[in-house]
Amino acid sequence: MVAITAPSSIEQIPLVQCPRANGGQQAGAAIPCVDLSAPGAAAAVADACRSVGFFRATNHGVPARVVEALEARAMAFFALPTQEKLDMSGAARQMGYGSKSIGSNGDVGWLEYLLLSVSANTVKISSLPPSLRMALEEYTAAVREVCGRVLELIAEGLGVDRSLLRAMVVGREGSDELVRVNHYPPCPLPPPVDCGVTGFGEHTDPQIISVLRSNRTAGLQIKLRDGRWVPVPPAPDSFFVNVGDALQVLTNGRFKSVKHRVVVPEGAQSRLSVIYFGGPAPSQRIAPLPQVMRDGEQSLYREFTWAEYKTAMYKTRLADHRLGPFELRATATNRPPPPSADPHCNGSGTCC
Ligand SMILES: O=C(O)CCC(=O)C(=O)O
Ligand SMILES: [Fe+2]
Image 1 (spheres, protein in one colour):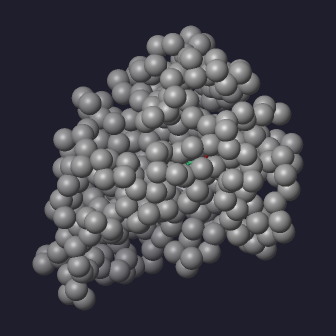
Image 2 (cartoon, helix red, strand yellow; image 1 turned 90 degrees about the vertical axis):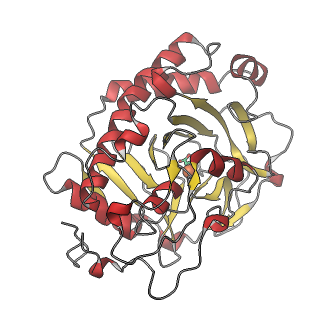
């Protein structure tokens, strides 16, 4: 085990209530799984984004060796003394190495991480060990393609131009792509019954989508629409896709960004996760896509730029409802349609 040597100790990390009764196969069944190469993938992706805001993606085309190389290099990095990690990557004010503190507004979790900007195929921290940097660049190039493919499928499922969403992130000059590598060491103290130690507190991801992959260690949980938290069984050969806040706005609330959190693993295994966040360029205007709106449907959000949203987000805590200040009041007549009334949806939950 690699100890975390930051100032605060495990006693200062908040506990979360996590009933174990939710676990196992039942939880796995709540998480849609989409074969990205299957003929019905666009409908399945749109359905998953509408009903859960989260799904497991298989047949993604990322070679196992690319994933394994990054996992090995990242674990070697996290095993280094804290000062070396800080010297190589800088302390995460916004980008770099961080331990326990997430952001600057008091959120803490039992983890350490590297947060990197990865636009245009380069990891913008040149002092990282070259082997880690190369592994990150290769991984990012492959996962960016997964992001692009998923954005095409989402667009197709929404019935809009296939390249519309992809073009906001992939290959767009100045798009805001980030990679976070999270390392959750095993918990040194057993938490009280039915509780877990916070690894990463509950939040939604702000971007359009995020593409996550973890090792075999559990810990990720998502909140279903009925309010239940369910564990996400680890699937190291798959990727998990989260709907982010920006996609919620672009679809005028048809897709909802998914609340998720990480509870520190019990037992001797560390959790290692890598998340690619697909964000647009700072000047990108975020507002419901006219192509998805029904006649007479009103926007539920005021228009904003991605830069504006990020500035607002940096002033909040993880669990805050960060879209709140951008919401417009909906009346019964201007709300987006329920799935069955949506012209792009056949009402059975499968979109055409
Ligand atoms: O580490 C994980 O599995 C999820 C972390 C997460 O949600 C994030 O970094 O945004
Ligand atoms: Fe997240």
